[in-house]
Image (tube, rainbow, N blue to C red; front, top):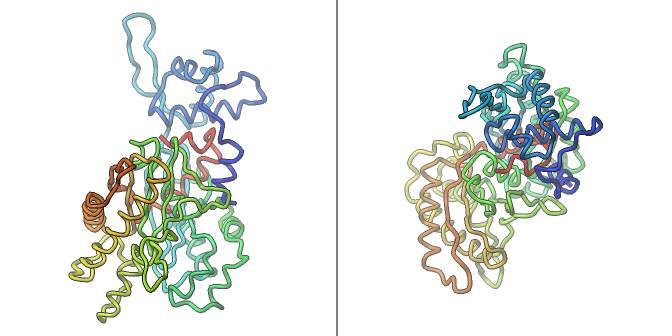
Length: 404
């Protein structure tokens, strides 16, 4: 079970109310205050007391303590018609940093994120297949480099390393041209423990697609919706489900595994979405034309002019996505579908436009067609979602506290 899902199980029914004044739950109350400030941008002590249920005195003591710990900063005083001006407080971007790792089938990313979710540094490496030793070496050297990029007085603020990785990675060797022997090294390999030992930092782990979905919800266009479907077009397509500002991972962490959804049929066999709407499909098209496709994951933000293969790929993706959207919205009444991916912005935009066009031509009797919109994080979404995990674990009241 993923770290995110373990937190969900324990804290699913926690809200952003019901703070206690008892000393034994001070940690809970501090997390509550930080979560409220994060959700609202900035709040005064009086607003915190009213929203949390804490007494005014307790709210004042906690906010002073968090300011002393450099987790909160004062904003300019706001003067009312009577009485003393109120002083809103906001999260200190330099109060906490976090590192996010994405382990993909063709590339890995490492990012450094501040307390308000801004990516300040990123590292990228491409490979033919993920190797356990090479990944640990990349993370070890990368964490050192990212740590050194911070001023010395801020290096202690790094909360940990959040890992976004496809679950059961060893099953996918044949799709990426890696031998079963090489990929079997991942089976039973405790990546989370290995990274903790290599870096000296706490580590946390989540399915890559769920992590990307969390990043879109926290930092992207997903903030506009309480519930939505998230589709991430990577080497394989994946995704996530958000209900009531909450990423639903499921008991095994595989909720939103849209890649396995049947969307077509050939020779009496079902064709899953991942066999149509994945970047490896485009790579195969290019290889058949004698084009080395490595640039697709080496330079995910700039593919250049691909001509006919890209046109064909987008047309296939659009029809398959439209079919998957109708199937999904027949089960749960989602108001929006957000499409993102490890591809350039212009390609993502064209995929969304084509999908909307295909969806408009489908029979949607009995359901309300959702809005189909672009995601906004792009290729760094899984690593960004990973970086959120240590912050949730150490500083916020529950996973849904940041999903707004």
